[in-house]
Picture 1 (spheres, rainbow, N blue to C red):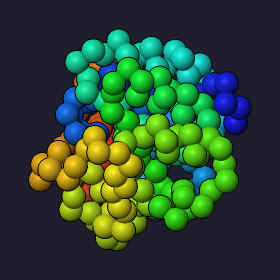
Picture 2 (spheres, helix red, strand yellow):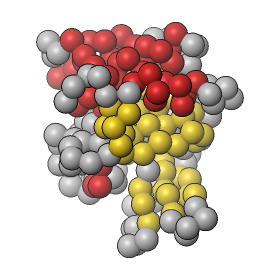
Picture 3 (cartoon, one colour):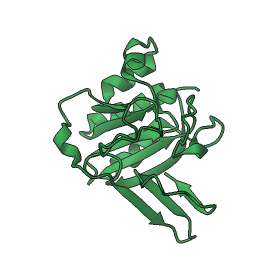
Length: 197
């Protein structure tokens, strides 16, 4: 994918379920991993999503003055690392925290020679890293499975920032469409008129 644009699957201006404090959340379209039980299967194909310039995405996030930070999820954020790094650099320079959910593990990220990976890592404060494995559910509020890890890249966030409870948000649009975000209980299943986010 070119770095000039992002393929955006979804955007939520305000959330308390996708990281510490109030945040804006961006889900990118496309993921090279196919983790069984993925919460966002519609975001896996690289085809699709809305094509948006990184500056425009950063502007969306910067208009949310009450949001402490931003979270990037997907899909796979590092699949669009160059363009997403541009967004992260802009919002970080404006004083917002940056959290990235990724299926890559720490070794893969640190050993990558991809310049976009390096830029996104430098602009991030915290990563939730590692493949999702449904057979070993995580207990931490931000870890979907127990094999994942928190990578603190700056001093901005600490373990005490997350509390002890998982959060799930449900939003119902005027059309009746339901958006579910965060970490729903394992028994929750989406119906035909429901969308993930």
